[in-house]
Image (cartoon, rainbow, N blue to C red; front, top):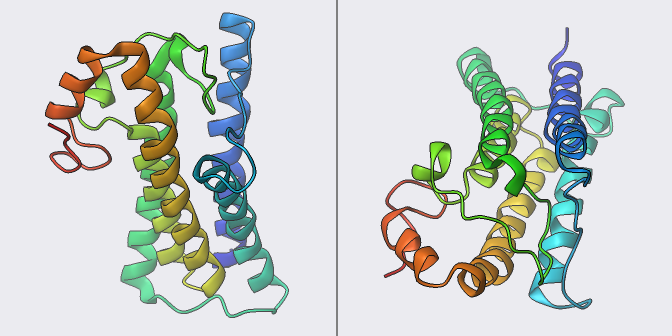
Length: 201
């Protein structure tokens, strides 16, 4: 099996699990899909984060398709880098799903101003504050290593910027409004995306 084909299959599995399966499970458990969509007015940082997320998804899917059609090179990472990229991708997919499950009924895609979900600080959320995003970035990084073409690298960069905007401008302010000092204490002891980094005191 060629690397572009395998990359496309891995992306299909990721989206099926992280969005399809998890949404279905949440709907069965709570009666809601948990999907709130993009927030903010067009042109705002919140809206830009959501738009960049959609661009990242599109570029990620385009990377192996373009390589298969010969529109762009698939790159040659070498056997060791390819194995590393594949391992990171598989780890990222499974860890994303595990982190989503760790949120339980508080899991959401996007933020609504009137949402009052519980603050999750256990499991993977005891290691970093945003493990789902961390693991999604790990997945995108793995794919960019496994299939190192310009589209895959651009997908990773767009996802990184989207996640930073979403967390800093939307989710952290929302959680601080809802949970107050409890969330500020959490931010002071647990890193944003990487353990020990992004603490806010």
